[in-house]
View 1 (tube, one colour):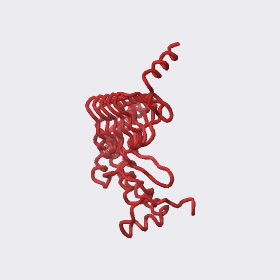
View 2 (cartoon, rainbow, N blue to C red):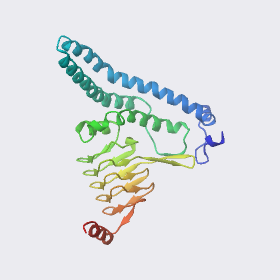
View 3 (cartoon, helix red, strand yellow):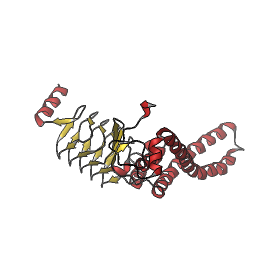
View 4 (tube, one colour):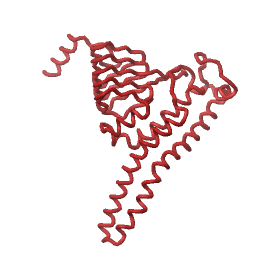
Length: 267
């Protein structure tokens, strides 16, 4: 079992018997928590599904007397309508669960299997119910922005968020007029060496994150800064206001270097 050992050297001492049990029997405790999350997810999905299933039951008989072709078209239509109704219900149900349950995430560093990590785990588990089902259909719409804000993500006025590849929304701050390009990956955590680190990410006003770039936990990007497409901003990075960063890992790109890059790509 040595490969499952956790490094708690940087974690605070156990706060009680439950914490000590959680650390001592990490995999067993983790399995129990996952099963409980599955039950919770089933409850959320069920609440979102119930009204549209009732609607299906009311609408389906309408087409029973129609010709077969029209009946199947009607079935397809109400099936699609059910999907979108389910999704819109889900972006209401999930924030409600997130509000009622212990999901107040605080920055921390330590072993994966400890009580302080449970709110973080639960918060993301709820968020992923929408991220992996319906969020792509409401990205760049008022429904998407409302959902992210209702999950406690701090979003400034006129911010442009063209991505659903988000984790830890509660610890993300997006400034006024900031722009997140397509498929930007942004999350407020990272792990390694047996430890998990959860730390906020702050994107300043009018900053631009190019398509496909990755921003990890504990990152601050200043006002009007630019992250070039496909770049990876490593944990702990502090991008000053107005600077351009790019590459893997992302680093400062000087004005002269950027002018040479533009000259090269324009032939």
